[in-house]
Image (cartoon, rainbow, N blue to C red; front, side, top):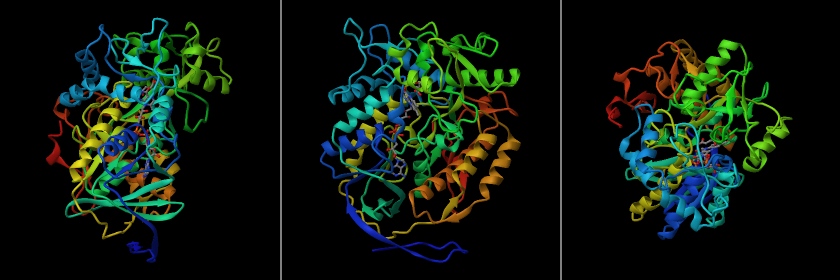
Length: 531
Ligand code: FAD
Ligand code: SIN
């Protein structure tokens, strides 16, 4: 079979030869918590599952998760309380049904992991230890290896033995009259076509849209771009969560080490260069206020003091190296000893609260296309995610999507139009510069207009390798995000407009973006009812 590259007007036509083909009942794109959970569930139901991961086994955000998993399992805590904290953090845009459903499935989700051998930290009395993070009204976050929860989740799911095709990137989800027909993938082995009636996007987040992020290099928003290309809706993209405490280094770019919120949960204080509290008087929860509040307080203090970072004072925490071994190693590598020194920190891009619109089984509005994990927008997070709700969501929706895919088992699928379409592509560093300058913690209309103009200045190119797929996904997603940020003329959750500092109750709805009949990204007001 030959994939014909549809030439852009200026581009010479060229053929891309398909070097491999496969058939599957279900293609899972992504090998993090959501993808591996879905793949396992679908396999147990007897589906032929093919899982693709463009990186290696630990090139996931899951691997880096520190704080833990928010789950109610204590007599002193209730699901209603967890739901109330989630909804309070979400600043008016959470879907209460989604919150109730996902929070309510927490215990079962964690049991999937423990059944697979995941070990969470216990105290001397044998009870699972719980920490606290921003926005939580109580200690409800379980953790592993101190601050290496994600590594344990990734290890346990990996040990379940799901086969994964590493180094293979989904470049396009092909659809036909009956919905999804399969995937076109790129790898070192060339171009592959997988015929399948069901595809799950579990591709993680978009942190690489920004120059500084906690996310790994592969967090390039591929799933958002793939979904838009396939005709699915995305929502709440303007709500990018900037984690308040990322290890600061002058000129530090790319993936930066996180200093978990659990460090504040165990008693560390956020102070400025003069030793003054950053959050006092800002929120009743002080240093443990929701993330958007703390990040904005830091940004304001940086402006007021003319500095580029603040500090975490963790010197009073007993046994810091044992409780936070990963963070200790990152600090020591930077010449900082958290037992003696203040830790320099600044906000950096961390999490996409919105994404591909799905129901509570991962279904998008394209038959056969599912999404789960960070790439999906279920309605759990609203305008700002509550800490440690993400691994929870990946486990819950990953399992449900893996089961839901069985509904497509009898659909005959064949990729007939194996075409890679030209997409706008800017270099990653150019996208990062534009987004960091104009669509960061604080935005305004003029900056967003400038960003739109710069992002529109992209050539349409067919992506024939993984790096180009990533650059294209970043460019397309940046455009969609900036569009959503431009039309939201208010400040809410993680979206702060300097020119519209107030929250406007008439805008208490999600912004939905999809491609229109001309293939252009547009706000879809017909879906304004997305709760
Ligand atoms: P990921 O784990 O990011 O996996 C994405 C997968 O998709 C990867 O395998 C990648 O290679 C693959 N992929 C992407 N695009 C393609 C493509 N085109 N083709 C093929 N494969 C592709 N959340 C919490 O709940 N608690 C925490 O304590 C916590 N701490 C965090 C700390 C850090 C430093 C970071 C970065 C995040 C943290 N989060 C935490 C968030 C959480 O870890 C992530 O949201 C979650 O792990 C995402 O899981 P996922 O399965 O959706 O994606
Ligand atoms: C952290 O440990 O601070 C990150 C937790 C999260 O992003 O959920």
